[in-house]
Length: 184
Image 1 (spheres, helix red, strand yellow):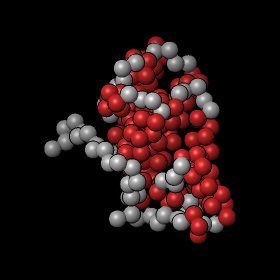
Image 2 (cartoon, rainbow, N blue to C red):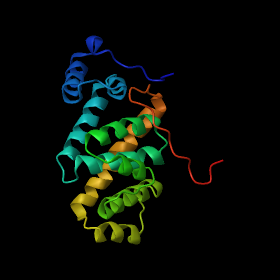
Image 3 (cartoon, one colour):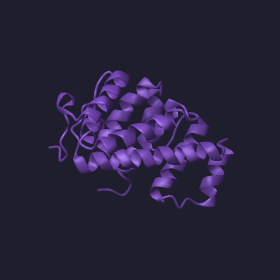
């Protein structure tokens, strides 16, 4: 059962209604996560602004969705895993890469390097090794793109935590989280 309430757009504050309207026009629906964020228009506005800014960066939508899957797995966020599986498909990520992304891998070696780097950022809370940084650079990413990977991690950690705290009700087809290594 959800622990944070969702806002009905018809009953939302004027600012929240405007933001939710933008979401509806962009996605054709208003996901429960954003309806829950609308309880604080500042939270929803911050999420949309950060997400929108990263969408204007150099990383493709497909790569950003694969990064989101890595974060969802690392943070055990079922809502984000389900959402970004659907959004990844819409962005053109092949089914095999959606599955490989659950283990921070991809058919494209450069994308795989970005996913492994994102996983290291999450696991090491930003304190990545020189080798982690050298690996992502060797795959062709410059400092701007590395910054965007870190930005994508930060945005997705926020949504992972938001949905985990709120136990947001799934409005995407469920996807099973892979078992963590060493978990019984």
